Length: 408
Image (cartoon, rainbow, N blue to C red):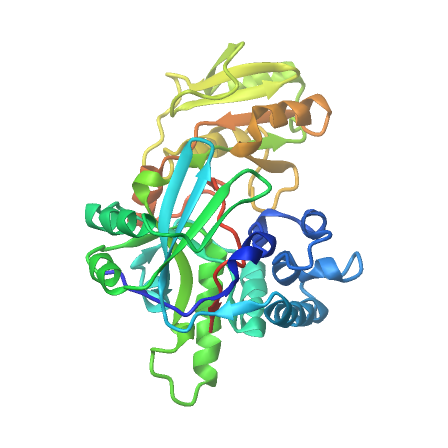
């Protein structure tokens, strides 16, 4: 069974929550982070992306960056100021984006359960990114952004959440991107602990590197401890738990900069060996097993032809896998999408117009629009202890960093 624990959050006051909160550290590059934080001394990007306060060109993994993170964190605590809750609590976090809303429970989850696969994964992590966030956590002695978890919805938990969300909120603001963020403090933790104890498994939806880094940070702090009990704060990591019924996954689309030495006509002919190709297609596929392709100002529809062998297996049958195994690898020569510089990935929120722009401006030769991976596919892959291809899911809306901090 899964375990959650209340925690004494370090947080901004309600009147500074909007200023402090920031986009997740890993959805922006240095220049984007610098632009977002410009003119806002309280932005948490000064802590999560501290290179923005150092000279241009500074190595983002240099000692100076982590020293700056610690310095900026202490300044934010003092100057904002950040407040420490006197008693451990849970929180509710609701996000509203357009017609979509979701509300989750903010809690600390067990690193033992992460290590023992009670908290399931579906992605591989990169060592360099783990190194970065592990060091960031150890320098700050804090987890500053939550891991996004999901679980199979339970009516009893839904009822508890609804009752608490009827009370006065702690924070309620709309960020610059139009997403409304509302948080409530839950003083009576026991009913939530009791009901979540009946949930057999949690699943990481987003935040694999944060979770892996929390596990590594725990290992280092445990090694340094003279009287480890297993109850220390570092044995738990900051999470937000949303029921699977509320999640929204958007497509994670692809663009490739060239046709791997082929002319447009040769490329189309090679496609027809595996796919049925139609012209004047909808830019967004309407169902699984269909792909849309933008080439030379025209949208094409792709479906596996009757001549092609159908893929078997939970992962191999995913649309992202079929595209990789039947087209990107054998035709366009993209062997490893983690490292190949000829491919880029466009989150579905940016829409198919962004795919068209990149191709029309000559920044890419071809673009592929995918049907979104479903939540059930994510759970199935995780339950099978398998790994999805990179860039399979794009969750929206995004949780903000800096609103609730877990000191370790």
